[in-house]
Amino acid sequence: MFPKSALAAASLAALTRAAQPGAAAPVAAPLRDLEWGQINFLHTTDTHGWHGGHLQEPQYSADWGDYVSFAEHMKKKADDQGVDLLLIDTGDRIEGNGLYDASDPKGKYTYDIFSEQSIDVICTGNHELYQADAVTREHDITVPNFKDSYLASNLDYIEPETGNQIPQAKRYRKFKTKNQGLNIVALGFLFNFDRNANNSVVIPVEETIKEQWFLDAIREKPDLFVVTGHVGLRMKEFEQIYKVIRDQNWYTPIVFFGGHAHVRDTRKFDDNAFAIASGRYFETIGWMSIDGVTKKGDDEFSAQASASFKRRYIDNNLFGLQYHTGLNETTFPTEHGRNVTKMIADGRKALNLDKTFGCAPQDLWMSRAEYPSNSSIFTWLEELVMPDIVVNKERADVPRLAITNTGMIRFDIFKGAFTIDSTYIVSPFVSMLNYIPNVPYNVAKKVMPLLNNGGQLFAGNMDPALDAKYLVSPEQWSLATQPQLENLETESPVHFMDTADGQKPLGDGDSSERPGLIGGYTTKDDLGDNGDDTVHSPLKFYAVPNCIQTEIDFPIKGDPDKVDLVFVDYVQPWVIMALKFSGGDYSTDDVKVWSNETVTDMIAGWIWENWKVDC
Ligand SMILES: *[C@@H]1O[C@H](CO)[C@@H](O)[C@H](O)[C@H]1NC(C)=O
Ligand SMILES: *[C@@H]1O[C@H](CO)[C@@H](O)[C@H](O)[C@H]1NC(C)=O
Ligand SMILES: *[C@@H]1O[C@H](CO)[C@@H](O)[C@H](O)[C@H]1NC(C)=O
Ligand SMILES: *[C@@H]1O[C@H](CO)[C@@H](O)[C@H](O)[C@H]1NC(C)=O
Ligand SMILES: *[C@@H]1O[C@H](CO)[C@@H](O)[C@H](O)[C@H]1NC(C)=O
Image (tube, rainbow, N blue to C red; front, side, top):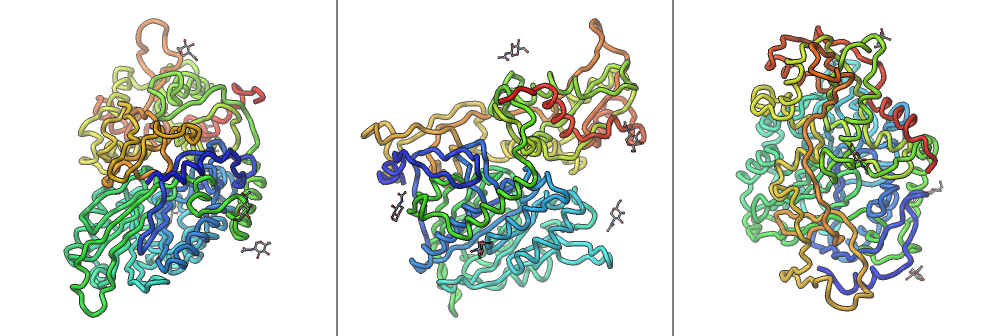
């Protein structure tokens, strides 16, 4: 829908400022309404510590406290209509924002802030499992915070005291909805992740679906299955789970909530089974509503009618959140929501996240600029940063080839203040540089082409852990798995004509009611192209390579005989493998530490030195 009322609302000039102090004010934009059903869901995923919202981006500037207010109002709306509303989160709540990463221990503020929202089904992402201390915090803090709502269908924890392997949380949950008493069976999965810390055990999905508890769960005959998972919708794991549940339950509606791929997407498995993914970094609150869910009662064949599924991807800003609740700046924030907004502001202040240590002269994009180009963050790294930071006095006389994977960078840099927060946003990882000395250049020079175009070598068949997809950002990787994104690099026109639901072209009617469109998501999924709540003008996205490389202190003429091959420690297994295929028989024994500083700190140091300008 693209109702007149929304356009009218959009023309209101005065917009509210709440969110975090200093956050960009939301901008008016035409909105599509949320369509309510019998059972409705709000979904977050891959928030990665962005619970303070995007302070530099008006479109995503609401914070977790605003989401608490939003959910409170939406629950009231559900109660008033006698329908149900459930909240879901599918993991990767940590790593990627100063609010989590800048504290010692990490997450000192975020665990408490996050748990202020009451969530009905919550599960674990791979990021909660990279570091052993994060696994422990998840077990000791988040699982008890969410009690019965926390599900770990294929994840175990190793108790430090006993060494016992125990389920990280409950395997599944059976419950009745508040207003209609619908029976739900909920599950909480993680894809077959294998780079987890050794105090956690991820059980492959194909094994889990043969376990007795799972076979019992799918025979519970609920009115609706709710399968949550930190799983990309187009990955094989959801497909496997769908098949076994459907084989056992021919008519029961199944709804999947996924994540990991950092995209907005909806996938249809069959008329009665849909999956939604709700983006990344708390830019998006996913909305899924289902009608036609029948209560089974005694007659198990009463549920043969088809359910209907509707979805929206809500841009996380106050303009939209207030619009969807029919409230304004005075009536929208609840006491609880305000309290949470304050908790975030206090945490950000304690961590000094707004402290500026440089002024970015221009926007630098991960995928919104072509690579290589002046606006590409990777070109900036390759040409300006790497030559300055890949220095080591003892090796100063040896030419270097320095390699880093593009997945090490997680977000764009915006023109203007570069803060402590920005540092963790751009690269939250603790990777350092390693090197192999004196590699013959004719061997070393073949490594990067193999990392970028190694074909079968890094396709994941020979060694799943060396799948090239782990070298890039989740967004880049999902471009390959999400069919609607195939025509990448070709700008697709925005279609405002949508005869199916009577949507009007923006060019019609009174132009005074028509705000300019803001660039943003223009999602195409299995339900069509009207999923985004905000009508955006499309952004162009470009593919980037798996890895980038810089030649440092090379001779002016001709090739060097030997080079030091310097690389981010994360890519070491790929580099060793690529060297073998290039005729260099090296192993981890040949690897030396290049420097003891994290790459993130080195980049921050470069910015301190080079962008010293006052904004
Ligand atoms: C995990 O690895 C660490 C460091 O290698 C080791 O000290 C610890 O005992 C291991 N823990 C388990 C549960 O295997
Ligand atoms: C917000 O809504 C309330 C209740 O409808 C109304 O009394 C108040 O004037 C509105 N405030 C603004 C700023 O529009
Ligand atoms: C909000 O914070 C105040 C002050 O700390 C406290 O008294 C109140 O109970 C809180 N309200 C909610 C709903 O959390
Ligand atoms: C872009 O890069 C080229 C080559 O590195 C340089 O000559 C040019 O001045 C740059 N342009 C801008 C706008 O930075
Ligand atoms: C890194 O730190 C270790 C231990 O503190 C030290 O032995 C080593 O020399 C350092 N390496 C470099 C390259 O600074």
